[in-house]
Image (cartoon, rainbow, N blue to C red; front, top):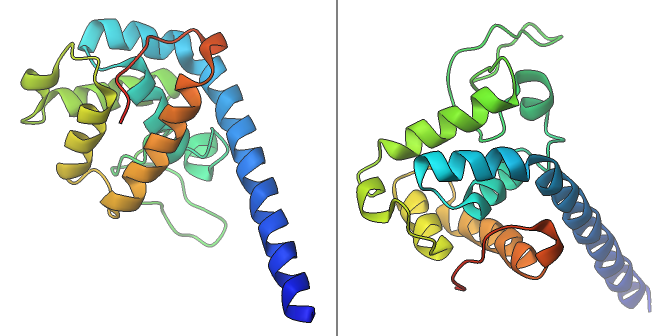
Length: 167
């Protein structure tokens, strides 16, 4: 009986966590979709891809790297921040969110797959290409997280994003 109780409690806890993460990601996406749309038009990277990666890498804007360093994509680089333990983060610091978004697009635009995918709206192809180029230290798990956010975007037409190819 005790084991069943623990299992039910675990399932409920995970369900609440997923619900809260989805709500936070939706709010984050709503607040950043205009910026992603403008950069999408400029760089030819689909806005849903930009937003999904930002939502995952910044935990919907709640991660310390997003809040303190304005780093919404987990980009590694220099920063001037020293935490209360005297340690520096390995993540790059930006002056604002826009600078983080622009840097992400610039980095992606220098990848070998970019010319082939530029202006292609197939989000699956973009995510797989970004994953294969070493963007994440855990590519399979990262892809699944990004695809999960993309699926949420696909089911939420109210967010007003361009349509994209399904997985």
